[in-house]
Length: 522
Image (cartoon, rainbow, N blue to C red; front, top):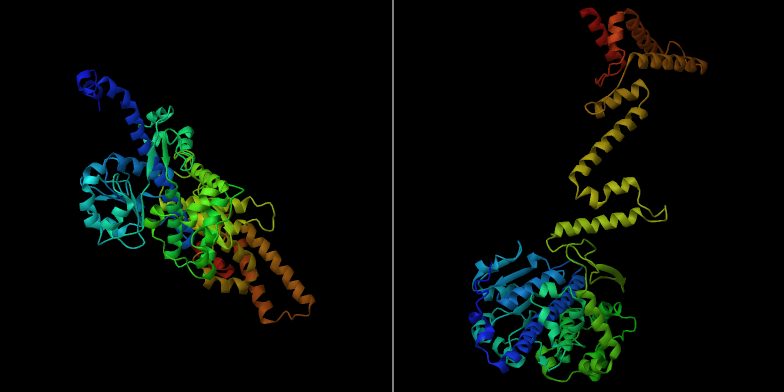
């Protein structure tokens, strides 16, 4: 849409500003852009950590329910960031806004938009508050009776401290980032962040927004990092995991990003006296995030003194945001085995955001099949018959599945045709497979079989088998009948049938009877 104010200087923002105010305008713009970019990037980082942890605990992919309350400028930027830089699918996101018809214009298919804050709160596992401070009292009144204890509330509302917000909601599982600003010469780095999704492609901006080493005149309190870790701890507690298993899960999510990571232990989260009495199978206590962000905690002291852990967190943050473009296909999650668990880590590349769960399963099955086919050890490599039974072939490709059925039918026919050689065996096979197994017989085949039967008769004679035995007599009569038919058959009929393929499931006696009928008619 064209800008109708283009060329009209009297309608620009600067026209009503004094000279001193004009000098501060770039600073205000940079501050606003920094808040939007860093707020969305940090929220996406935390959301991805919670989602990955839940996937590991539940043993399945992507089940985190994410709700966004408010679709103003910040809500739109947050939605786009979640879709670009996390593994959250459209079906996992619901939006509550006063004007749902406007949100439908830019959200993807599968994202549900409506205007019902209570319904959104009752459904969501993570709820983002993107409303104005003036609307907060009404919003909290609508949410208060619908929030579950395990719903993580992430607030972008300014000028309202977390303790006040906890009182309005009657809820203590709340994260609220607190940003501070200082005047510096590098604040202009944020002026290029008109759209968050394009700014997330810039490595320098990702580096500047790193939570523990922020640049450009903005900083984030270390309490926010503590709140992220305690949120992961509460997720494990709500799942009923023991303290030992919880620590293994959280440590494994970060240790791969930094080689010198210091292992977190129970004393890193709770007091030493309580940690000494905590059994390995017992879960951690539920931690109030309101206290975490307003008081001094053991984790705050640990992070303040551990440079290695700070570097590990920064590496994990950069690894998530510096992924390939969504147009490139790749592995959805990096999987590894640790203490009997399959961990789903942040992807180096990921599938397009338009991909469905079926497409994800298809890609996962294909990669598994490819790995098994490329195994170097022949004894461990997948066999062709096993390839046809692999889920990628058997479940996701109906055409190949139909081809597999046809192949099995042909193999069955070949096996049956080679197995039944004698007349008695062929007679029994007619009743089992008479409508399926085709029999190709020509004049040449009849002569070959007659010769074979004659040889078999002599073989029986050499074994002192009586020529007058019922079997030998019946065999001789059948052979002579067939040879008689061949002799009595007109030459034209012989030529016409020399290359014919008979689909009749009958044996040699049936064929002789058919020839007799044709001879009479002819």
